[in-house]
Length: 159
Image (tube, rainbow, N blue to C red; front, side, top):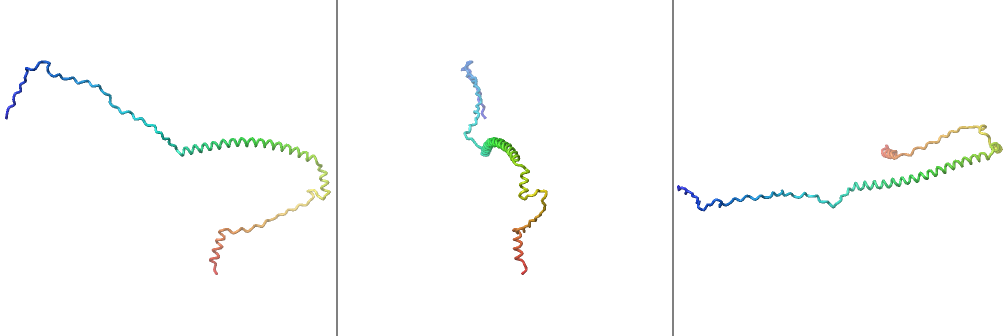
């Protein structure tokens, strides 16, 4: 095997400070971590409508309208009822007045004398008789079931 040659350094060209300087690494500015922008939700332009809710709202609106009309009708009816009550009380007062005028207008003894003159008798003198009448019962009409029974009895009757 061969021997390695002995390495000798040449020092004649070496001048202190002539060596290549080691460059100091440049201080790099720390960059902030790249962050992705926060995704914003896009506003959707579509409006969804719940048909059951719309039907409920429509039914409530109709019921409210009917209720308002009912209140107005009841108010009118109460006004008419009060007017009729006043009219009835006026008629009752007028009737009582006419009744007293009518009763004061004839003589009971004169009416009794005229009745006896045409042959009528007082109630106390007449004979009373009680008559009871029994209404005969109709025979009930045959029902559909009676017709069916009659039909099958006619079919299976011994000849």
